[in-house]
Image (cartoon, rainbow, N blue to C red; front, side, top):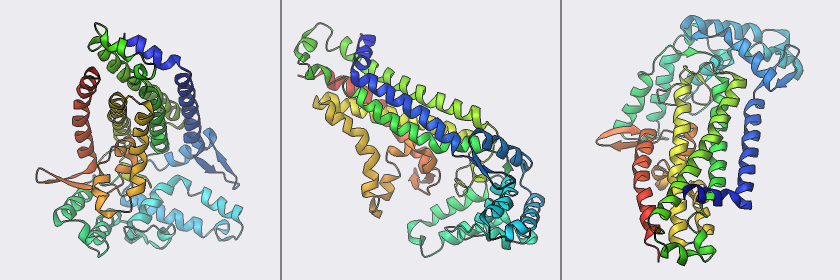
Length: 405
């Protein structure tokens, strides 16, 4: 019965079209993830793709290791020497590119310095040019100090309680330093486009599973289905199983090949580095590595798919309409953009299920919640909440369809 239901999903023209769309999304996203990395050659020309990945990795490997005070001082000296060159002082863009080409190997460390010595909510690309060798040794302390200044500023003082401020400062202070640095561009590329795969894939999968429970009503076969001997028991259970098998298979068929292809091309180095070594996640208070963030991303996406697409199937069963059911993923994904301007809803949006589909954004946000008298970040709260909510949905789906009249 289960395979019969699955065949019904994919035998339709809409099912075949959905598979073709998913394959196209997978191919395009893999290409985007690899091609968005660029490299400036010594002559000032810019290359992208696999060649750029390899050349950039070669330059960054020279700086791999712990970012100690000596390393930071070396960056300041190298940066100053390049800035004093004729190429850097030239008004010609290509000559300036030649100067930039010499900084690519330590550009990530350069960004760490810029962030640490700018105010918390600002970023000035040339700030490193005015930081001295004596000052740069205070980089890790400056990170904490900039956070503290921001938390006690008028801008956000009323937004956080004293316990929440203490929590964030403690997270910054206990982050293991000095950072270990390695080229992590491959992981960053995978994470950057993972939300594209997860979100678009979920919408397409929503079209497929939305018809599993409403199909009998649309073809006027519901009377036969529910009057048969096993219609309300085994046949209903088969529909539930078919839905979850479809969701699970399509999710992992999308996510695992995407990750494998991109990492095979860009490399898996830097997976053990703290996410704070990158520009994207430099201010995050979560103590995780790039590999751990990838794990959170793929399993968070899977939990999100299960929860949202189960709601889709439940709406399909209750309303007998695939049209209404397929709107569920769209509402969940796009509702936050319409109510984002209401500050009173900010806490609720931090726990909205779309957070599971975009973990890379969630780890950058300072969303905090009080659980059992303790302050916690949004990620553990979101994961725990939606796993618990999901566990009640399959029985509800089965019972709802079984009792249809």
